[in-house]
Length: 126
Image 1 (cartoon, one colour):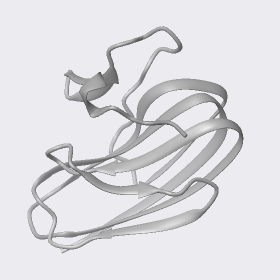
Image 2: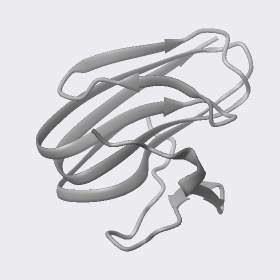
Image 3: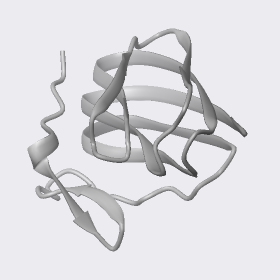
């Protein structure tokens, strides 16, 4: 089990990064409708998808994940870094957020020697 400590994440250039860069260089992903990422041995915390929405929209994020080895946790964060959902690994999960707050919603992963693959599809409606 991996625990993502939100206090370990700081804002740098409007992206989220972990303060400890020991295991990997972190990159913020752009605001795309579809995102796919994978690694053979990932340790750390990383934002894998960001979505900017307006107030009172409907956001649907579908996350399909596969973990072959190691530990992985996937969470969806709201604009104020509140946890919307802790997503089960090795599943396909649809997270529906009605009446969104204005801001950026994020899918964040935390891993320990994780060999994983994640695909994310998202949609926004008014």
